[in-house]
Length: 363
Ligand code: UD1
Ligand code: UDP
Image 1 (cartoon, rainbow, N blue to C red):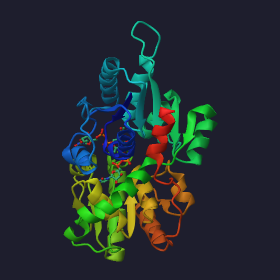
Image 2: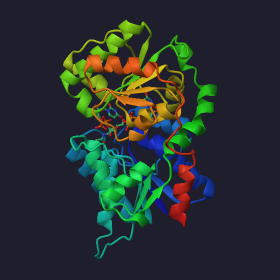
Image 3: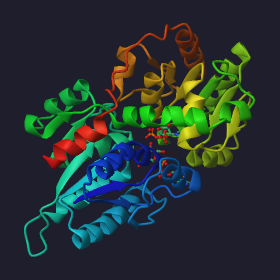
Image 4: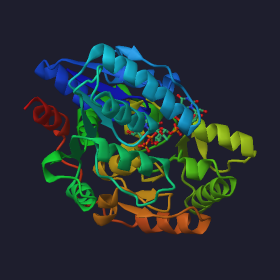
């Protein structure tokens, strides 16, 4: 039996192809939700839109400091694993849920009376920004080194793992499950969502913005620089900037008392609505990992508002640039990417990563 652990918006989306694959193949699994994300638009909407089974267990951990959140998830996960005794625990990505899930599972197999011979699989293994000040970098490095199965999305991720001494036999290059999720849902999003029209936008005539990285939005100077850069872009092109605001970002904009000019803020979108907004945008400006990948898959140029990326494949194919957080460099990066021909190849795989991962685990 597989325990599929997830806790945040991107994990629900990127685990969905794996859950689907288990269902198709009749593989025994259960979903353990840590409750790291809990607001309807950060959590339940994705289960509903993607037609996923409700989690068998929800730990309801909620928002806390890094250590408190990680510790609370570990305690909850350990209890569930000893009760349900799965053969494999699967985690996805680089959140505190991933760190805590992988660590709790690894500790369950320490020899002794209660020892549980559980293995750990890390989906989206081997990504590296080489910046240990990002919480996600710490989480992904630790999760990789605890895992028995490392599902690297690309060869460059595989190379990172080999460089760190992780054994060849543990690493499988599968593609990224986000390609599966995009391919499975793009047509549905066209059919079911009408958000571009509802927001009074027209295809290829607006910019899409997302922001939520702690190092960007919890730092007043950086956040102000980013918002100023976005206002400059609005002033230069006269096109709408649409910004579904992550709850962390909403909280910080309010607490810093920052003003937003030239940007249309909206609540976080469901996946079908967001895919439509993303696929029809002229340009994406983001600090999200998933949005860098999706815009690359959807052939929408991307400006990454960060100092580094763990998705260098998007830079290599010419779909993305790193802009930092200085207003001028964000505006310059947007100008550069608007002239980019959209002819790159998708480096993240063929959309069959979910099936590939389940096939490897079943074998
Ligand atoms: C987390 C992950 C990040 C991932 C992101 C996806 C870590 C360290 N961070 O960041 O890697 O990119 O999820 O979106 O694991 N909040 C709500 N409702 C929710 C969830 C959060 O209002 O459902 C607010 C709370 O004020 C909370 C804040 O957002 O304090 C931050 O939430 P948290 O889960 O700690 O981190 P994220 O920024 O969401
Ligand atoms: N997303 C969404 N609605 C939104 C913003 C993003 O459905 O309003 C999706 C997006 O399609 C992508 C994922 O959320 O698949 C990215 O999550 P996020 O940016 O929160 O986290 P990251 O990928 O940086 O870890």
